[in-house]
Amino acid sequence: MALILIVEDEKLLRWALNEQLTRAGHTVHAAPDLAEAKEHLRKHQPDVALLDLSLPDGYGLDFYKQHREQLEDSVVIVMTAVGQVEDAVRAMKLGAFDFLNKPINQEELVRLVERSLNQRSDRLEAQAARQSRERDLDQELIAESPTLREVLRVVDEVARSEVSSILLLGESGSGKNVLARRIHLRSQRSRRPFIEVPCAAIPDQLMESELLGHERGAFTDAKSTRKGAFELADGGTVALDEIGELKAELQAKLLHVLEERRLRRVGGSREIFVDVRVIALTNRDLAGMVRDGGFRQDLFYRLNVFPITVPPLRDHPEDILPLARRFLDELQVKFGRSFTGFHREAENSLLGYSWPGNVRELRNVIERAMVLEENSSIQPEALILDQLSAPAEAAKEAEAEGGIVPLEEMERRLVERAMQASRNNQTRAAQLLGVSRDQLRYRLKKFGM
Image (cartoon, one colour):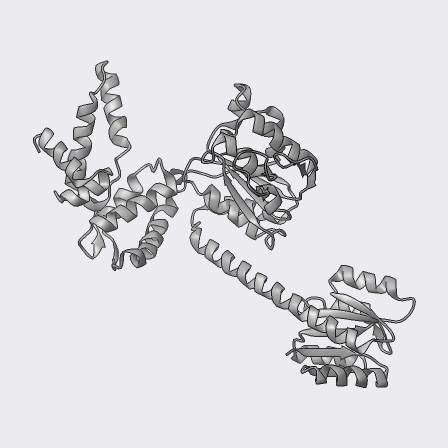
């Protein structure tokens, strides 16, 4: 049941409304004027406010404007006399739920109050869920460096704006997906869906259906009608991950949707209006692809309305150790183990590495270290940091010698490093190399280790 504030100067009507809503199980405070209503608001937060517009000490609409912030979590229903419909419409534009014309139908009033309470409950539940997601997102993001803090400032500004297309540029693993979710959650569209489409992971023949949907019978396996990402996200946000992988034919269809805000499902004949914000993510040089003919120029300009470059982890090293510690805390639950932190030399190793795989690689390194480490703190020997640099070093040697390092030699080096990192534990070394224990044993025997 709800706390309801009635502001009505007509004594008989005020009594009747009070009686009707009290019988319906609500707690009611009936105020004869705006002064008493203001005093009640100072002490209580009503779930519903029934507000007459013509009162002896002022105008109800002015009162609503003045106390909008206090009534933000309340449902406001205005009561109007003949000739006040325009004022009621203005109240609804301010945020009022609905209006009732006098004389008031008592049964209609109770139904309207119940409907408004259901809507308020849904709104507050969605708001709580959104705030919970925002808290989770804030915990997921660590930005102690000025570089990343500036990026987050720009991200939050564009989130609150009406910009329809945003382009997130940056290396793989740098956090573009996290920022895309942040943009959605901090936008006016946060109550509507957020749909991510991994453009590189979906087969070309299914991509059009994934984006635009399809009608039943449109192709062999289309046994029912299906909405695509743009329809599902109507009113919300579509994040197109790895947009540079989209084929030319689909680029043209995507451009049509962005420009016309309409789409046609595969096999369909009618056009469907959609209202979405598009966030495109890529680790590729789209401008270079345009010059080389690999990406449509008109689509590039349509997506590039507000470009944001996400810096690689090596450009904001102040965040490396805070991120590493956060990952260590998170993963302790997964592994059921407790670590006190990182040895000083391990921290120096993390800070001295270039992180070609960015934040994603950092998390993987911490996870592997937790599998390998037997001490209470992470030691430098447990950090496998040179899996990608080993081939790079060999390539430099080969270039200097004017030759090519044999594949077998490269394989031997990696096996040797894995055995060193695992302290000759074959099971752990096999896990690091992504092979079975038998496959590792074969290589150990082959290389005479």
